[in-house]
Image (cartoon, rainbow, N blue to C red; front, side, top):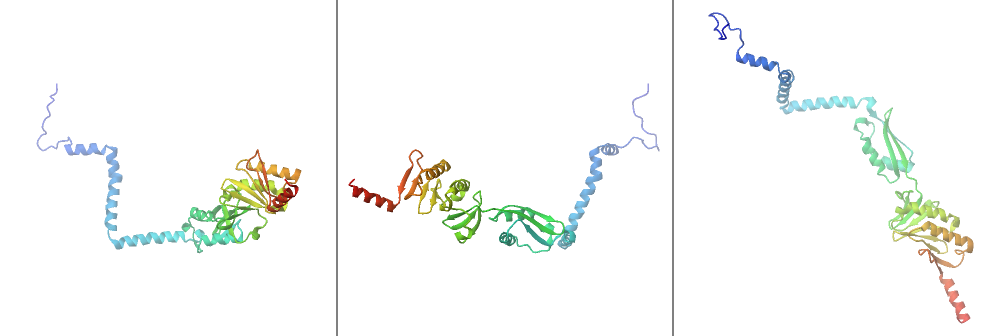
Length: 293
């Protein structure tokens, strides 16, 4: 049996066994993480250190920043990226003018300098715009497609006259009622919030022809239908359309509105009330006195 005791190397011969530090280094080189650190981490650290030292000088930093800005400008200002004009479709001349005023853009400019979502937001903030689509069209054109709000009524409020669409949204201010005589008139605080109901009532009252003057919102809860000859139909808070149709049916059967009636009160569905005008009331009292009743 061989002896397990390690013999000392003979004099003049090198020991073939690796040293302790060499053995540890070999073990480290077999570790994937250590090899990755030598291959990637060390060069990155040295490069970062060198860059930090180089960029510590303010003049060098300015030179690098300016070089980057010049490269970026040379790309952004290429002809294929330049926007030369703005086109607006779907809007009237007045609305187009408002859009151009809201977007004070100076052409030509780079498409990289245009924030399309912000431009769209500015356009939709205009009262007369319901929806807008913004894109850059080939040829350097900023294309704006507008869906305008269509006015359906004139709203008279404490602040003046305004056009509103079928949702009650504000469209534009107007100076005089005669400028939009073809649109129905609604009045009162909060009337714009109930435009859909007002349109239904106006549609039902169209059978009255030119006698209809408009609708007045009372207390933010119900409507009064105003006719010529100072006649008023007072509608209830609920089932207003049905109440108005009852009055129109009475007019067709008994000509209630043709008579000297000042008000038709339909607020209590079970007990409609008629109020005569002052001249008819005085005449009625005069007849009663003559008859001795």
